[in-house]
Amino acid sequence: MKKIELLKLGLPLFALTAVAAACSDDDNNNKPVDERVISFTAVAERPPRMAGTTTATLDRFNLYAFTDGKPYRENLLVKKTGGSWSYTPAMYWPATPVNFFAYSPDISQTATTRPDGSGVIDDFSNRGDVDLLYAVTMNQTMKPSPVTLNFRHALSRVTVMLASNNPNIRVEVAHVALNNVFLKGDFEFPKATTAIDNDVRGVWSDQSQPASPLLFYAHGPSDDLVLKSRPVDVADGTLGIYFMIPQKLTDVSVSGNRYRGNYITVDCKIYDSASGVLLWPNSSTPSYQLVPESDCGRLVYPLTTPAVKAWEQGTAYVYNITIDNPAELDDIDFNITVDEYK
Image (cartoon, rainbow, N blue to C red):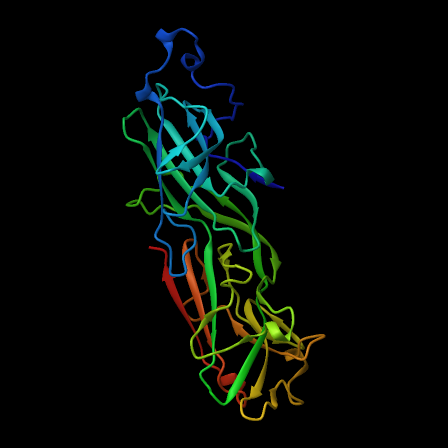
């Protein structure tokens, strides 16, 4: 079960029963004035090309607030209505500073809050279609302007681009997958404001649940992806799998008939363009490059490079693969580019 724990500066977490006492008093003289209503404005980091969540598309987040060592509001849903952010019931500025912690999208339906206040999203599991964002704003006191929440991307964005520049061959792709990557981990919120000019980050740990998520899947030969000279994002408009748990990567190796490490697999067939004859796989293709229960061969590309040994939080990785030479598959052009989120 996923568990969300939000920072309370080491003090025990108590159940939230109400807003400030003055907020529930029926006496008009005791009701807070409008200036004491807490309002918000939220921005997201500039995303990489082929964007995930942006300031323009962020439309809701969940908020926890703590003051004087106690919870002030728990799991409050804040939504964008028109051009402003709204929530209910209203929250008023208390006499003591407030710490705000937020995340988006809403994962509270599969999470619980533990009382020790260690500031961790526990056992976050994601198959790759959720762009998890987080924001922290500390030590806020009453002011007329909204509280700014600057959201950061908690995950790594991984894109695989495929192309073929050789007009003499026709490459038909049936499946593309990442292999042996962790899909679960614990995330600890930073203990400082995630302001634009303050490059503090949360921390991932205890990555687990290794799996091989599909980025592209053809249901039949008619759905195969035929490669052109223009690179195509294999997940775009298909499975939409991009967002991975930040993690260390290991080099790919072959042991017997089994690949080990972290790698990309491209299941495909390569034909002669003029005659339509199948060039690869063929009788010389080793068994570990044959796809079970399929007539495809399996090409394998490492997720590591000399410069990239880990997927870092808030970074986009674009793997460009060009399949051009069926006679010497080891010489297939392969390179990686890295786009920073900001």
